[in-house]
Structure formats: structure tokens, C-alpha cells
Length: 407
Image (cartoon, rainbow, N blue to C red):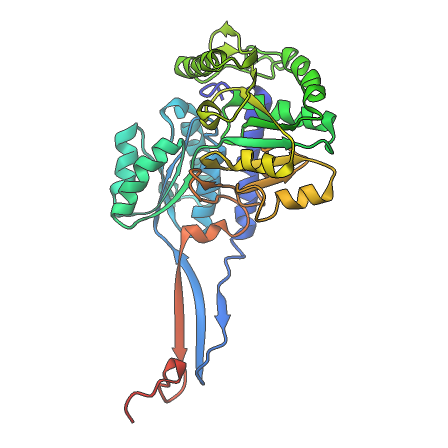
């Protein structure tokens, strides 16, 4: 994926995710179940059925141009819809290749029927995204990107009382307990925080560490960061490739400059040229506005805690609510973190990092992450409309709730 500058292993993984979504959707196509409900009225049948919505608008970001399209497209198609896709202008080659793959698959399997047209591409920037949000012919708008983008489009979709599915910003946290496996946590931290050069919505951005293991964890984490191969994404030894563009570089440098001005200790973050920066660890004394703000770059803020309640308060104390995790071998801590009084995110993990959600589980988050769910579980219902159907096969018309109306 030369467009988005991913390292080879991650690029191949994203393509595999699209293939897996095809398999998942084919199986799901035989499981789009409705319900038959026992009616309170004699000689009546009550049902709920699902029908296609129509045209699905899909807006995708640069960082996962293939996988996120597949999440939406595959489910939309098996639910009987068509798709209009506006991809990021930073990933146009990937977009064109996905469209070509779709066209070839349709031509090989069901030639001559014109099903290629079920996927249409729209190229452009803000204006085209706003058109998708405004046009009432778009039955559902699925938009992936920044929280700012989502808020801008949400008001436009809401103005026409349209349906929307949002996958927006994430400021994902990991709690490392004194009861956790530190070596396991370090491995998860490194992949979670620096994979895709910190440009995932599920990137680990906040590390909340118990004060008893804080020094021991950093003593392992800092050399692990310092040894990371940073460089050309086409070199198979590279684990951290370049940021998407110079603007992303400047945002990272500005965030690190602000951290230094606050007196926080910064490890790494050096600019290496060609949009390459060494991933940074920032020891933050508090969860200030800088830490609460998502910077789409490999910056990991590290905080201390003493009690689990404090860790959960810190973890939940950001506007975003996508992914979260805790490293602990203490059953009570794990159950508390995954309970209603624990993490407030859509994805909650124990002893794995915040990244790598499997397609079999619904993906999405709460709060300013938008509340949408893609892939997995019953996410297909968002791409359909539901009808409640009552059939009277008798010779009288009894009313519900036993109401008597006239003779």
C-alpha cells in the first residue's frame, strides 16, 4: 500500500482482513434472521423482518483504506444494498485496486448482469463528503475518520433525520496492574503504540501504570523503543514506517514540544527525515488537555496510579471511547475493568493490547468515537430496515390490549 506508507506485514494483514470479511459476509448471508413473536390476539401472527436500506454511503480514512471499506461493503452487499464509496484522497490507488478487484470478481462469477455498478466511487474532499451527508437518497452514511469530521457530518445527516454509523477518534488506554505480567505487557505496548506508525484508531496512546511497577516497566520499555527499526516501509526489517505526510510530522513535533514545555520527560521522538520519526514515550505527571487530545502519531503518554478506581477514572477521563485494555492476573481487577463500572469503551480487553479486533466481534466505540459498530455480531442490522408485520388469518378484528371499540 504505497499510498499510505504501511510496512509490508501490515499491508498484507489489511488485505487479509478484507478477504476474511468476504468469507464472513458470505456465511452471514444465510443468517439474516427476523423473528416470529407470539401474538396476544387469537388467529394473528406477529413478525419482524429485515429489508435492504437501499444506497449506503461509505467514507473511509487513509489509515485502513482497504479493511474499513470491506467491513462496510461486504455487509451492505449481502444485505441487498448498493454502495457509494468516498475514500481518503490520500489512498486513491488502494481505492482503485479494490474497485478493480470487485469488478473482476463480479465479472467472473455473474457476468453480464451489471452488478459491478453496485459499487460506485466518488473522488473528492470535504464537498463530496457533505453531499453524501446531505442527500436523502443515501439511506445510511457510514463515516470513518476524525471526531471533528464526524461532528461536521452528523449535523448534516441529522438535519434530514438520516441514519448514520460513525467510527471516529480514539485515545486508547492500557492499565498495567502490579498483578500483571510485565514482559507480556511490554510486548503488547510496543505493537499497540507504534504499529502503523501510531496511525490507527486503536493505537495505544495512554499507559496507566501502577506505581509499584512503574520503574520496572519503563526500564524494559525504553530500550525496546530505542531498538525499533525505523525506516523504509518496503524493507522487511522495518517495523515503524513513515507518517502519512508532513502535516502529521508537524502535529507530532508540536505535541512533543508542548510536553517538553510542561516539564514532562520525553524519550525518543527524533525526526529522521522523509516523514520518519522515532516513536516517543512521554512521562506525564497528569492527564492534562494535551494527554486528553488524540495526536495521530506514535506518542505514548505514561501516567501513574495507586488504586484501581483511580486507574479507571484516569482511563475514562477522555472524550473518546474506542478501545481499552488491562494487564492483570487478578480476577477481581479483570472483572471490574470489564464490568459496567470499568472501562467505558466499546472494546475492552484483558491481557492483550487495544489493537487487533477480530472481525467476528463488533468493532466500534462510545462517546466521541461515535457509537457505531462495524463487522461482527449483529452489525448487519444497521444496513437494513426493520418491519413489524401483523397478519390476521381469522374472521374478526380483535384489538390489542383488549380494547373494546363499539359493538
